[in-house]
Image (cartoon, rainbow, N blue to C red; front, side):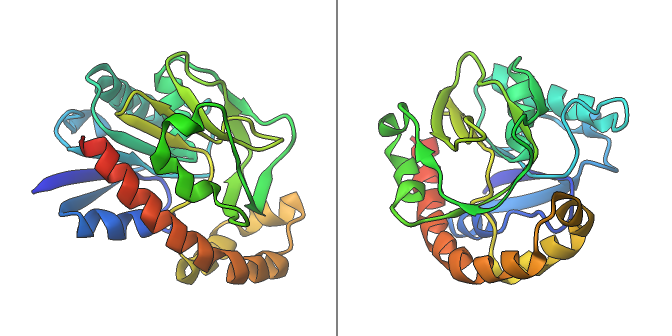
Length: 236
């Protein structure tokens, strides 16, 4: 069976709808808590797919969180061999860093909440991404950092405040700044786990919960088709 290694920074920021589609596609999934695991003992080339999930820390905080150095080295090893990987939020930023791009705090402040993404010029070359660009669809943004587009990447989507919302490197690496994987029934964990961040950013949990009630079910449907299309694209 094909194997997925999922690098987790927070327990509640999990694979979500991507996990469902991976299981249905015949993958077995291993989760690794990168905060406590010794990543240097892991063979970076062994998994058929690597997924790097989100978290509230910055790629540039390696002095405070030393495991980030080993995580970037692991990702860099897979990039060198053109092996499949998906990065979401912090995961996308780590792929960018491993590719040699700079990662830094966003100049427009945090982007948290439900909003659409806009297609970038390269999006038309990648039909699998179209499911996330349908009219009226909103995705969940939850980030305060951004990054320069890697030199060998193609941009797929943008927002006004964060121009690099999605990118691909060849056919083997996909980076997503936003969160297409979230599922409605799990979001209450996010509101509690990120309570301090939400309060500091002046975000109303009540309003965010109401927006999620409206937009999360629609995203789940679109995201499942998106994951299915991307997994097929990745396998060709």
